[in-house]
Every structure is written in C-alpha cells, then in structure tokens.
Length: 272
Length: 332
Image (cartoon, rainbow over all chains, first blue to last red; front, side, top):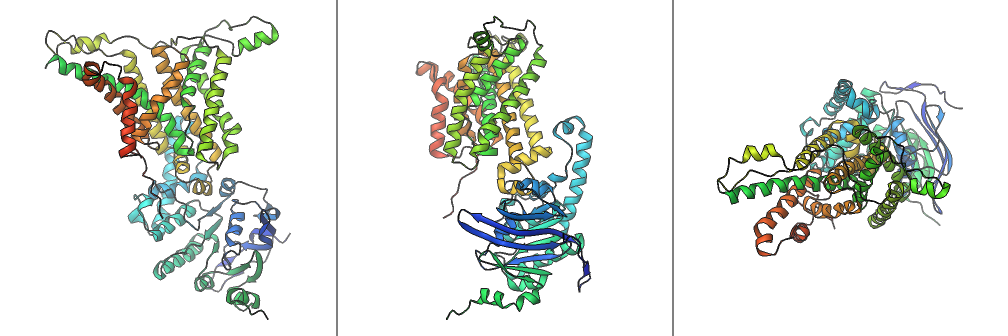
C-alpha cells in the first residue's frame, strides 16, 4: 500500500494531501484493440491533475474508466484507500465522483436551475413515500439543496440565465452549466473532459479561472483532459502524458515539458 | 337559447369527458416513450390486465385456478371472501408495480441500446403474453366491475339545466360515470405533474427522459427510473381500465382502447404530457361534434369509428411532430 504519502504545500500555498484515486496497471480493450495499455498513476487530494496526449491516445477512455462508463479488463481502481469493484456509472457518481463530457451532456429541455439541481440528487435522502407523507421534510431538504445550488450558480456567474432552458444557450455557457451541475454534487473528485474544447481565447481564460477557483475555494480535486498545452501547463500540478494507450510521461509540467518521449510524441520523430 | 345550440353544448361536454378517457390511455404511452424511447404496444392490454386483476381480487378469485385444478385435480375457484374496493385497488397497484419490475428485469434490461423497432416488437410480444397471463390467471369470461361508481345520467345536472332552453329542451344528459372519470383523471394528471416537477424521483425521471448519459453521470440509476415509469404507466392503465371497465364490462375488447390512443398521440405528440391531454380532448370533442353536425345527418352515422384516425392522418401530413411534440431536426 502506498496510501500514505507526505503532504506538501504548493508554491501558491495549497496543500496537496493523500492519494485519493489510484489507478493500478489499468488495461482496457475494445475487442482486439487495446485502448489503454497497463497504465498506473494516482491523483492526490487537492491537486489539479491533467491527462494529455495526441488524438486517440486513450485519454477519454481513461476518464471513462475512472467514472465507471468503462470497466477495465485488467488492473485495479483504488478510491479513498479502498479497492473499487466493477461499478455502474451511477454508482460511481454516488461515491462522489462527478464529471463533465467532451460533447456536453446536459438536460436540454430543462432550465439551468433544474439542470444544476439534478447534481444534488445524490445528496437527497428523503424517499419516494416519505416525500408524500412528510411534505415538510422534503421541502426542507429541497431548500437546503437550493442554497448549495444558488451558491454555485453565483460562483460560476450564471445567475442571469438561471431560468433559461439549456437548449437555448450558446456553447460556452453550456460548458459552464455542465461544470455547475458537476460541482453541485460537491464531488470528492471532479473529472473534466476537455473543458475548453471549442472555446475562444476569452472563454478559455474564464474557464481556466473557474477551474482554479473551484480547486482553491472548495478544495476540490480535479482531473482534466485538455488539448491546449498552454492552459494545461499553467493550471495543473501534475501531468500524465499518454500516447497510443501507453503512459509516456508523468510529473510536474516542467518535468513533462523536458521529457524527450513527450516531445517526440507531440512533434513527431524522424525515423531513419 | 335554441335547443339545437344547447344540444351542441351537451355534445361538446360529453366529447370532453370521452376525451379525458382517451387522454388517460395516451398518457400511459407518453410516460414510457419519453423516458425510454419505447412505444409500448402493451399499454391497452395492461389496462385490461389491471381491470381483470382488480375484479379477480375483489371477488376473491383464486388466481390460476383453472391451471391448479387441471394439474392437481382439485375444484377450487375462489377463496370465499370479498375484498373491499379500496384494498383491492391497492393490491392491484402492487401487482402492477411487480409487473413493471418484471418487464424491466426480464425484457428491457437485456435490450438496452437496441433499435426502436426491436423494442416495439418486444412490446407486441409483451402484449400477447400479458393477455394470455390475464386469461390464465382470472379466466376469459366477461366480468362486471362493481366498485360502486355511480351509473346513469345525472338527474341533478338535468334538472339544473332544464330551464335553459325552451319547451323542447329537457336539460343536459351527463353520465355520472363520465363525471367521476373526469375528476379522477384530472387528479391523476395533476398528481403526475406535481410528481415530475417537485420530487427527487420526478426530477430524475425528467433527467432520464432528456439524456441517459448525463443522467448516469449525476448518479441516477436508469433501471430504477424505468421500473418507476412502467409502474406509473401501470397506475394509469389501472385507472383507465377501471373507468372503461365500469362502462362496458371487463373483457378482451378493453385492450383495444390502445388503438384509440394512437390518434391522440399523433395529435398531441408522443413526448408531451400536456399534448396527450389536449390531444385526447380534441379527439373526444371532435368526433362527437363531427358525428352530431355532419356524420349523423349526412353520412349515415357511425363516424366516431374513423374520425379520429382521419384527423391523425391529416396531422401526419401537415405537422408530423404533433401539437406539442419535439420537432426532429437532423443537422447535416
């Protein structure tokens, strides 16, 4: 067990704690294709962990393994010091792992507020019959959850569109609503699949700021996939680099930047 | 006011009340279709099965008695007790929830991600299966459903309104059962809307109807929600079965009310609860009014049998998504 590691304090004064999620020798196959080949890495409490790599490197597959959308054929997933049995995505969500999607998966017909409220579902304890019998208790629970949700809506600066049906929002705002919904679950681990894909520079800056603020204010551990190298190197504490399903680099942005294999993967290498 | 005009109003009122029953059946379809994309052909048979079960439980019939007698050589048919209506309704509801669970567990769980046509075929199979089970459990004879719902025209309404017209007008004839059905349906619909809008499970249900993947990511069990919507559809089927059963006896033809729901759905849209209600009312009023003004005087009557389908056909040509359905736009 390498569960206990020395906590350390980052340059900007955040404390990085124990290992929260430990992926051990994960292999994922689709038929004969190995999407992930024997990869191990960990995510520590309070850190921003990036997974990068060229297209088709298996980054999204890795995120899907963490969030339970895929179950790996080999390897172990350890979460909060316990080995996780194969799980359905909704069970993983109930464990406190929230996520966003590369192609935005929101409830288009529902308002922003309702969308974010669905993020609270895992925190609602009152059962079906109890809601009918003890109306007061359900109402109280609803109020408490509304407070959390309103705080997050304020935080992400989407008050103005609270009542708007999500289907009518522009792309950048949808991404933000999706983040709000994931945050509403008050997750222990937040997974972001390309949170800045398709955004312009200004939107990217906004999103980077939100990610840093979320990590800073709520202490949320974040694992993200991102293509924009500048952004990744700026905001993440540690970076995993994947290529063709293999892990080719792991470390701080500086370490990764100087890793020859990483440079080769990104810039291509001359074959003679 | 002229008597003709008043009769017209009476026709509209009766049409509205018939429409409420159509809407009730259509509602069962919409619930399941919205949440899982399954067009449930078995909805009508579910109404029949619910009504059969209710009668069977009330009369203290032994389920599968023919089968048991044939195998064991016994001669048992009933327990010899009678169950009060309210308790019987509750027990029937439990049976319907059990059915919902079984449907999900044994059929649709294994068909996740299949083409809509395959899911549809499965519901056809389900319809015949359930019909057979209903026969085997409770026998195939026509039963009367006597849960104490009022029958016949309302004398009160007739006397109250008889003063409106001249000598030739004797007041509105409104069926008491229709009135009860309208009230029950209204309560059920309001209940469903409150449930969907304000409860945890209702919100989860709407979430699943909107996006499966996103629903999973916020911790919603699709299986649970599907059992829930099939249970709700079972509840709606029970109410529809009771109302239609009380009207015309519990018999096989009860399952054909599902066919009446089809034009309602085409009119209102397959994915809209308000659409099902409005569609039901429009068809109820439309067919009665058409019969009264054009059908009976000019076409020899009995237009009620086909009017709804004709209306649905016209809608299919000009507004295929229905009044309230989502417009399907394919981006290229």
